[in-house]
Image 1 (cartoon, rainbow, N blue to C red):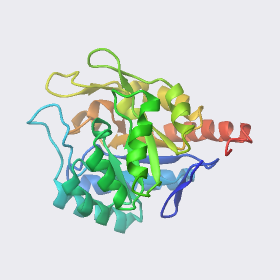
Image 2: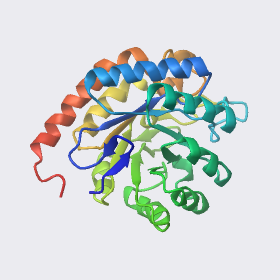
Image 3: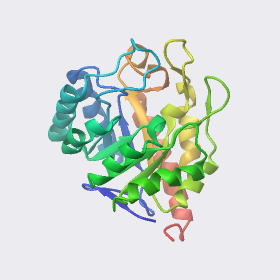
Length: 279
């Protein structure tokens, strides 16, 4: 199992899972800073490493009128401030080759959105930055098929790769999670992250936007922790019902501490019970 280091944070091996969390998109600077502050305090209290996530641009919204964020320039400035003021590693999506250089100047991890997990030029350009890459498995891919995306990134000599499961399409406007996927992808030798909040999304389920079932985030997160994941991904908002993006599948900030404490207990039990897990 490769260990992927992001500053002081390390994914992989028998280490405690890392939390990747933050709002779906940057709505405004003050809200983003408040969420970052709250998440840092919570993870500090629980002794858990945190990577802050927020998208400067959500290019894959359902409708042309959907909120996308503040854009590359303004959004990256906000993320740079979060990194500086809270001393947190930062992750965000890159949607196009033209964004990669600017994003790599600010981000600690470049994230490839699930819909773009087969985009060769984007994967290669991201890999060439030398930054860690979080490759989200497309909703249309079997777990073993993500190996092709991994190979595209690794062809650049960059093997600082994280793999993320976020559910697979099951009929119309629905996703399901096959927990075997987490084990199968981890057998490729790269740390695996479970994106619990996107896994309860109902794509296009609200007509011109996606809906979601956040009441199942806890159950899926506990199940994933019991497989031995290396990281957990949650979208978090102060008031999800008023969020401009992915509110229906986002966790309220006030609920994060209690749920994360449960998950860390599951994680500790599993990793203590498997002495040969690093092999």
